[in-house]
Amino acid sequence: MRIDFSSVEDVDSFVSVPEGTYLCRITEVRERATREGDPRWSFRLMVDDGEYSGRTAAWDGFSWSERGMHRAKHVLSKLGFDTDGVLEVVRDDLVGRKAYVQVQFEEREDPVTGNRQVRPRVPYMGYQSADDQAMPWDSAGSANGA
Image (cartoon, rainbow, N blue to C red; front, side, top):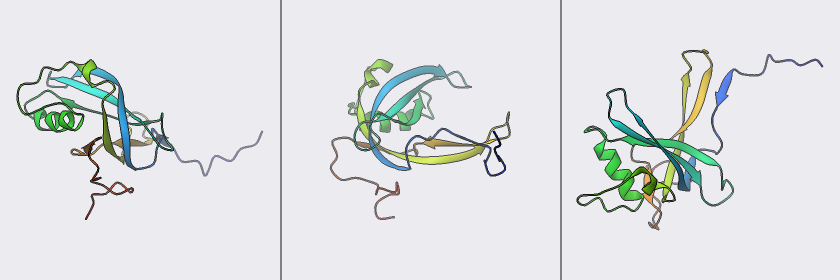
């Protein structure tokens, strides 16, 4: 078999859906520690309806550090948790929760292989309540009115 690989780019793609906004359900939560030793929860965001239903939209997460608390509060509130006061939550409480999630792509060079990588990511405030009828982003993933 003769194959010409000259037009094949050395890009590792971890993308399974186009950029945009999706109703997602959390299907898995992993607990690890940040470099500073703070707990970090990472979770798989699975598209819950439409053409890409059942595909992983992205992996995202937040840390339980002083610096990460603002985003943790935002994400948890958009997932339907009451964040107005004291909240007792364990990682498995997130499984099955839904929210609209904005997915964008991020490119970087892998320091080990030198290959370009393309990964989906969720912007800092890229969550909206699944119950909210007013979508904060258009289908291209940009903020409404921007």
